[in-house]
Length: 345
Ligand code: TYM
Image: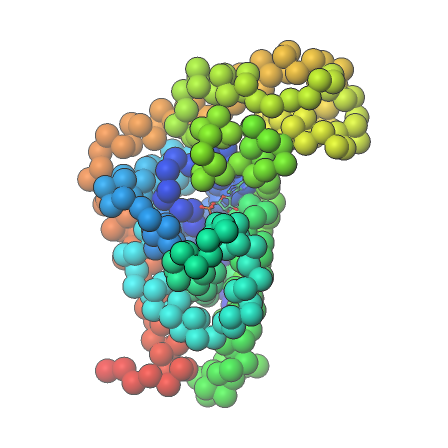
């Protein structure tokens, strides 16, 4: 049986989305919406792996949904919903908790980073998080997963889980008519956004991240023109002029990051922008960069604010998306229950 191509991806509702989320994933999501059946989730179950204030969480779920729509996702075409409204995610995650091995999770670098030194105090959810992520994708038997570079290891784990499930339950899967025990697909990472690893504006060796305590380290999609200009002005640089060849960026992480962002937001290659701005001082280049960012990001922020004015409409979009998501996941979950050996009425 040939598996239908289906796209799944998600973002955590923990504060405002930033330029890394947009250039690393969202731009690619919008592109794939033109050619594929796409399911885009606001992953609220993932968010609570670290403490979230309930009022802020509700706000963040709506704000990320608004950001999806404001960036160009069409809720009529793609399925947009929040994870907790579709029970299949949590249920399949439990089954995957029993498929994945401790040794696999012990290798996850993101857990080590997020748990920090006091690993004993991290939630069990934070540790099991990659299993939930595998469940998100496989509850829809999705085949393609557009993400930024940092999610690569989690996706490799999702592939391992899919394969182990298929092997462990091979007989039961074949009895249901799936040739070669192929029930779950091996989901493919699609890491092809215009900038798959956007770095912090304060340190070109660190990823731009929502959890960085410094607001100056990232550009939020809700930043206004003044905030963007200030952040770019204060972005870390080095003392030299910009190189006139790409290879001159070696060992200059801040220059590489800022030029990479400029290329991504203006839709050009690194080579083309290096040819344009090579030899300039950072001060002159930063003006170009902030103008390009303002032109691209401010209209999205304005649209987010407009959409947030009607929370009931956002909730309607999520409810509609959730019911369409359930319609895909429920029959798959019925098969999973049969395959595992549960009795259902
Ligand atoms: P999250 O919420 O951290 O990030 C959402 C998306 O943005 C990408 N991203 C970046 N890309 C480039 N540069 C950056 N600095 C940057 N920061 C973030 C991420 O790679 C991601 O694509 N575990 C996921 C959410 C998730 C998921 C899934 C994704 C849950 N279930 C199933 C795909 C499929 C996460 O925390 O992403």
